[in-house]
Image (cartoon, rainbow, N blue to C red):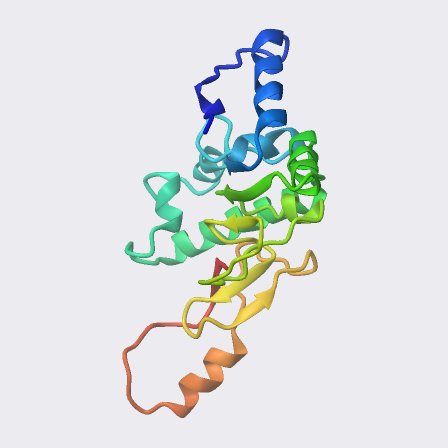
Length: 209
């Protein structure tokens, strides 16, 4: 099994290494791809952690809401009005960028591998659904006999999920969540019927599914 992660491409003109990677891919019977934000940057979706990434952008807009960008996704941290607002702004900006984005040459290349029956699996940290746009089927939580080539490790912004009842909503471009709260009617109705239980606060749709 060859590991092409050992290659360090410093520029697109590094012809020798590019040819060597091409040789290994052509030679391989099956390929497993581990993908991160870098493959979507050329589509106009910034990464999270660079100096001009999404974390710093939101921190400049909401300086008192959190200490670092990863705090936005830490379920163990207390949820304040400021942190909820920051999270909603973050997801709103990211969703707008995703709606405008189109699959890159890398996404198309992954689809070619699938069409050649070489692609075993793509494990991706990305939540932009661009691989699905080129026709790759996403994982649907099958535990056995999973045939889907794409496993979304961090979920997808195609859907929103209520943090209380886990009801799932389609996250369309018509949903605007900038600094406002989206009420989950399912969780609200269940909460009205209960007479006992822990106080989990308001039932707002917060997290990506």
